[in-house]
Amino acid sequence: MTHGIHGKQRWWALMVLCLGVLMIVLDTTIVNVALPSIREDLHFTETSLVWVVNAYMLTFGGFLLLGGRLGDLLGHRRMFLAGLTLFTAASLACGLAQGQALLIAARAVQGLGGAVVSAVSLSLIMNLFTEAGERARAMGVYGFVCAGGGSIGVLLGGLLTSALSWHWIFLVNIPIGVLVYALCLRLLPAAKAVAGGGKLDVAGAVTVTASLMLAVYAVVNGNEAGWTSAQSLGLLCAAVVLMALFLLIEARVAEPLMPLALFRLRNVATANVVGVLWAAAMFAWFFVSALYMQLVLGYDAMQVGLAFLPANLIMAAFSLGLSAKLVMRFGIRGPLTTGLLLAALGLALFARAPIDGSFVADVMPGMLLLGLGAGIAFNPMLLAAMSDVEPSQSGLASGVVNTAFMMGGALGLAVLASLAAARSAALAAGGAAPAAALNGGYQLTFLAGAAIAAVAGLLSGILVRSRNRDLPAHGDTPPAH
Image (tube, rainbow, N blue to C red; front, side, top):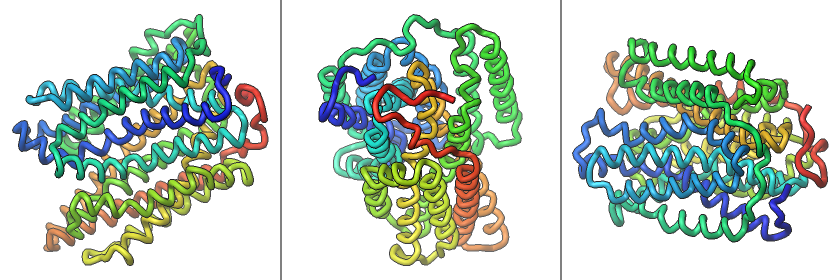
């Protein structure tokens, strides 16, 4: 299935889809830089300010799976445009907000729109590019946008906030959203829903969405409420109960939201487990290295963004061509395993970063290895998660892998941040200087991230099947087995 378009038009369509995805990816990090300005302007307290981030994460994580299935049932193009419209309108509301309530509510709507766009965009790309080599190159472009967008968000957030105001980190989405919408209408003809005629599993949709939202809420508030508090444990238990109920429903309903047979596909199951671990390690790298550079080395927001530039350039080189060549030459397993192990080495180098570190000696080597690892690994990971799946379930598989990434990243960051805070507090209680105590916590977090990435690499090497030679030269998608 190629939506009736061929040749260069497909690549233009890919660029437009990736531009829409980039808006979503940027929004997860661009806001962090502007939080001090938002707090001062709208008079947020420290406690209430976290909801500018949490409101977005809550709806984004909760609706990924449902958004992907709705794409299969109603049409991927239709749902992409609907999600894009919702996200753009909510961005306008965020940019014009003059009060706390409106900003937080608009951020929640942004998360909903972002979840739908993220869940169906991967399906659109997989169905646009069905030849093995082209699909690998297209997934490389998508992978670069996902992996590199966060770093770009830090740089862009610092630039817009310092040159204009925090309102512009949201208002900049308006012309981009309108442009992407218009170009999608031009480049992506309406296509029949791949699972047209199916019914939405309402009970499954309600239970899994509620479970994911409760889990995200517990995770993003874990550090503040306490991981062993009644609130955190109660929410996590409720999320587990709802997830168990969801699995029970899926095993019995005629047209399940998520057919459990999907996880009998070894690459799909393995890629999602690896995705959870990889996201935890990547979030640790991105957020904790930014904190290390700001709070220990004294970098400003612009310098932090520039410090990520070497990693972004390497990710670009691999994602936009070299990774696809590696996949075609060596299959999925080898590049995925190698990339994850290189990233683990990069995190291990950060684990020894000193309090008086320099960029060239103590930051750049880890950045280069992490950029190299991410550039090599992201493409084969996405291919592993999607290549075994039938076209009628591509939106669902996309939603599942995006959910795995989001939940792995959120949970991993929360747990590793708690680990860093506990270590820093112990060092401070022992008489360490504030900067030394902070650095000790960050070093432990990097070491834990390195171990997690290494486990992900080993699992990939043992369990992933290399399937690039099974991909058809022509046709829709490879058969599932």
